[in-house]
Picture 1: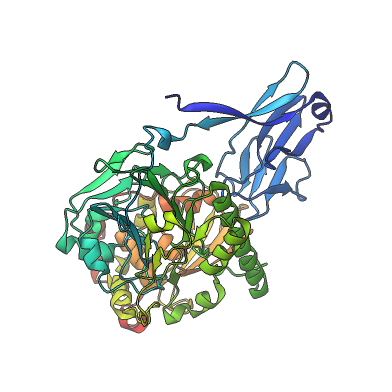
Picture 2: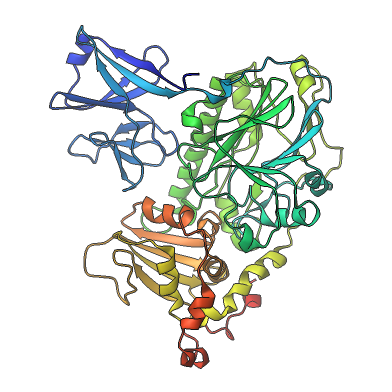
Length: 597
């Protein structure tokens, strides 16, 4: 089968080509309404889709650009230099995919897109009739679904207990009481990516005590999904890393295929599950899976919907970041996400759509501000928009324990295909064992390594990020982000990976990051990614100028070494006289784990 093809996405006649001005030209296809950018300079033409590679926003003219080469995204204000196809805000981030510009004999042009063939079309299966109860989908909580597929049970992304992102996210929905039993009885488990609301080590630790050999499937991402398995001391013995775009056959009727996200190939994946020719598509958190090409008319589609899975802008201060600006930004972002999901579902035309993977809450009392500020989309409202835009699509707003019978749903939309949990079932969680998990994090505060200031140099050399013009001040704080008197407060100059006492005199961007001490030390001690701090709302940030430094954050959120810092070696290298000296940095007798919980 030919896996690569091409498609003409826009045609201009000779008159339209002649009218192209030097610089940026915005064009819209009269056939499908999709938008494109053509850049002209010295008679040469370049072209691309009018779609930001970050999260799919539309570009408009950048009024701050005096050279006429830059466009600005309407979603997050990312900027693209169309003359080079490089993103300039944030700097050193993505390259825009170009379209081929083909001139015709008549003086017109065609914009041609190279298309990767749809891999799920390999070995197509005709749908067979399903019996009632043969295929059921049970919602457990957040992104966790149980699929009954004939004689097999498959579970997606089991986060059933404990927090995610250190202590920032907690389950909104109460999983059914037998959820852990269901997990232990699964025939196979799919984990979409390494974020802790999908890869939940507290959940997997309980699983491993009963079924360490349960088959778990993950995609072959550039950073292994289970890179922390040994460090977490979870004994799972049947982890299967599978290639993208290849059917994985489970039995004669059941197979699945994992697809890669284009925007975050090191991280995100999604999955197509097929049983007797009936497809279930779960896009999870993917921004642009499989280059934006997904199967149409699947029987069931599920995706995220809520928004709010980032510290921006709630954790930022200074400059424009007033409470009113944040509120307006969040409101607009949630609206854009709702419209995007509505259009995506409408374009793919699944028979049934279910929004999920957004049911978390900032439940800890110390995060009340985030909970109040970080408003999220409601699944019912998204489903209402979809019904209005595409009335032929059946929508499902899930409750914990609710069951969708696919055979009944496909027979007739009017039939009772969804069984809700019994009346009186507790839908929302009202307790989370905060102390158990927060105390575990705070135990890192008194670790031996933090008695020696040289841990800072050792850690950042291990992290391996340098040769970048950015100076960062890191400050350890209490629960309310007030600096601790004896906590560490230090500068890192990533240009030469030095640790000055004052900011350098050269021109440089600057960020100040205040971190809750227990989470920061837990992250440092265990060599964890900084998602626990940033996505988990465990820090507060300000920056001069107000520019997102993609290379810095991408490194600390996805590219830290897979093997953690060798703190045993560090302690061996610390001179013996320092061990008995007054600890540099925080005084462990004045600030303990218990006072911060």
